[in-house]
Image (cartoon, rainbow, N blue to C red; front, side, top):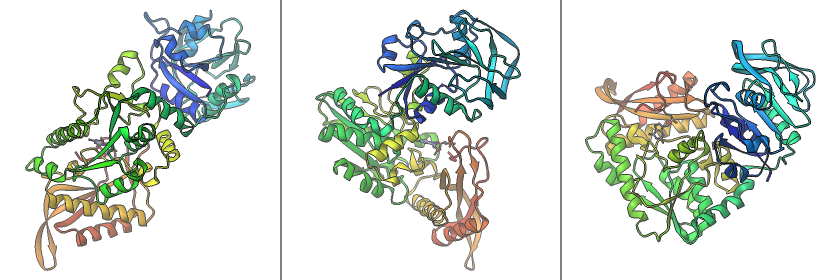
Length: 507
Ligand code: XMP
């Protein structure tokens, strides 16, 4: 498998470079600029991309391009800070631009040298310093009104620099530029896909675990499902998979998870029915943070019990994915490689004597889904919406009782079914039971009932979100079904707040 290494100088968009190269079907990995040479060389890169970064190359302790990269004789592409660092290292000159250039600019290409398409194209600029004197052997391959050297290249050495960011959406032709670099200039074969990696991922798990045994906690979410099935393929009966039914799941969820994952794990999935225990420990609790703590602690206790019979050396399979890992320095990596603290389940105890197996640690979310398809996981698991670990406990505002959970579950089911039958898609859609009662009239009697809030949002990344503009008739139908079918609820409201300032969940 041919690969490209991205050397990270700390830009916010470094991971996006990796993504774009992988979209061109070339495997690519991000390495902090101070990663030891042997770690980077272990993937045997066909070329290097140097990312942008917040520093100025004239600052004291500004990060430098590793010597082994400059001496590799392989193609190099520097982006923004990466281009400035190249210019400086190769004998050119960099200086602060008269004005910071930030935003969309038009570049003009007369000779793109195989990297850039001829003509004009919009690109995203974000820089203070810029190259003023090209290193010898380099020529200008693109210019913009503000940057005479918007791109530079030395075709003989196959070293290039871009002042702009090809990895961001605002550079529509950027994916093609990175593809040309990886495939045409570095000569990497475009044959990688997340599922082409399955045999290697299985071998890696087998090597890591050796004669030991492993445990995996399935949450019903995509990442833990894919990680567990992969680990099962590698370890067979030496993997123990548990699914804790907290009683805080949505309607039909526990049955769905067992039915769809059980067969892929050769019916070795152990379902721990702990609904009564969770409900008992939540009795009388209304504070959301306390709910999270209680759920987290109980989860850990159940998990420890399940893990107790495992023979050492013991491993824990985790669905950590690439964006969970901070790659900016070796130290951060160490910190983030600790057991992922699902903010939901409070994290697993630090004194548990497990080594981690993280077979998805180098994949993005959509790549995990693709890998899952390669492992025959059903769409209903792979396409699931996010669901918080503490489950319905944090959507049941106020006290969590079995009657209130039942009302919430029924309302949530109606919402989901109606959206589905009207083919309305959304990033996330759920019901919330509010700790507010209000007056109503049901039949001829005055009622003092509970309130359901509906939350339906559109979002790409869940960091920001907007409320979905659902048709009024659809909302009317959902509301009418909820008040008619769900005992104790006499009012339904629709949440019309974006994130920020609100969050997606209510607690
Ligand atoms: P917020 O409410 O912060 O949520 O806008 C953003 C996304 O994260 C999910 N979420 C959680 N997921 N444990 C989780 O595993 C939690 O405690 C939790 N709280 C929020 C939420 O559903 C949304 O997709």
